[in-house]
Image (cartoon, rainbow, N blue to C red; front, side, top):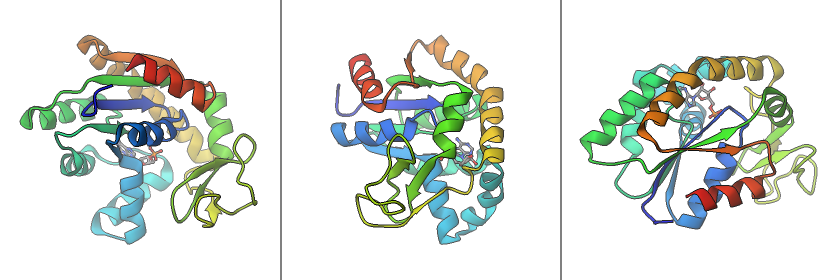
Length: 212
Ligand code: AMP
């Protein structure tokens, strides 16, 4: 794998994008650009962007394109990166193409993590995240050593506001509505790799490393 590789990680909420992106970014020494994390941070800090996006995020709806394009443009550079959670719609893919074109940057791979609804519901409804460092756990598959306490930093484990059943279903619905045209767009470019995201995270990573 080259160390300035530029990857888009794509998949439903709960497909494991974030988990894979963290490991991949560490191994390759490249930047992970997680739009969800950036937006959550803006909400936490109550910036003007944070106040604008909060309502969409709590309902499981996509934040309007013009707000997110700006964030992406500010974060992208010529060094390698993994885009986690962007683009999610055909319009965003086109906006990204424009941004990349302006800076003469090419995407090397569009990686799809395939999952079904049952997997998504199971993963997200039992997901817990560290309030302080963002480490991710699962009540059954990947519990912390001490209940409610982060193994990494000792921070408090919480459930994300949008990880409740009603919002999970909404996010799955939004994903399904948007994903086909986006996939077709990248299929045409011939850079798509699909992996079975239902598998255990180490197996998915092995497969991912092989493909890249
Ligand atoms: P995530 O952490 O990827 O599950 O994203 C959490 C929430 O952030 C989503 O439900 C959206 O409200 C917002 N968000 C993340 N990525 C995008 C995107 N590409 N476009 C619009 N909204 C997004």
